[in-house]
Length: 247
Ligand SMILES: NC(=O)c1ccc[n+]([C@@H]2O[C@H](COP(=O)([O-])OP(=O)(O)OC[C@H]3O[C@@H](n4cnc5c(N)ncnc54)[C@H](OP(=O)(O)O)[C@@H]3O)[C@@H](O)[C@H]2O)c1
Image: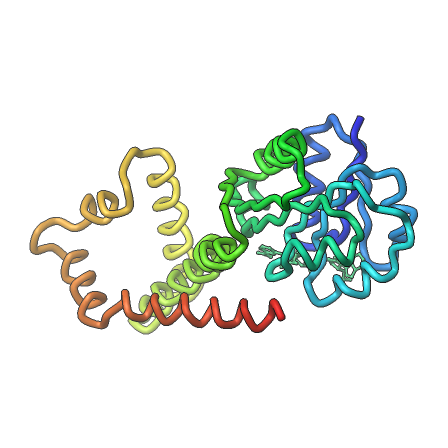
């Protein structure tokens, strides 16, 4: 049975722990702040790095166990394969970027394997990622940064959009709790329809936008306000910040 060590049991690491424990078939070891990382990684064939990027340097420096040949799966945003390989002293690094939907097994996880990762090891990583939702393999690390603006930050952007819808209702006198409930359930229901139907996003919008109707009138305002231009700026700002944090 493969021993997998998850380092960092916060939002993401704990969710992975819960999902993998339910799945079974691995020996799982968790290592959170204050635990003896050397004892935790000792004997592990696979190590999942789920700490914040800011603590990674100190964490790696504390590891004295020989990790050469061990498989690293990183979910840390902004830290490249080469940097992880040097710090952890193994050439077998798979960089991934899940999103918060991992908590409910609905993550869209991007993946890029380092050159020394074998086809069999990559397949193993894909099997693990399949437990968290869907995975997409990309051909360059730059694409992790680019696509991650939508997949990684997207839950935050969509939640922000929901907040604005709720704020509109509150501004018109609707009770705050009810406004939040309406916005939340609208997002949940929309997600479920997207999931269950064969509609693409444009179909989805058009199904709600009858000619000359209310939704069409609202979408027209968003077009006039250049929502596309705003999203371009949002994406560029996130990419710029990613580049700054990756240094
Ligand atoms: N959240 C997301 O939506 C998301 C999406 C994609 C990728 N990621 C990536 O996932 C990683 C984890 O994010 P998160 O949101 O789960 O962060 P988090 O909730 O802060 O979890 C990090 C965990 O690591 C622990 N930790 C700190 N120093 C440690 C050490 N030296 N050894 C072992 N554990 C240590 C923290 O403990 P303390 O809290 O006590 O410090 C915390 O439990 C990040 O690298 C992030 O870039 C996150």
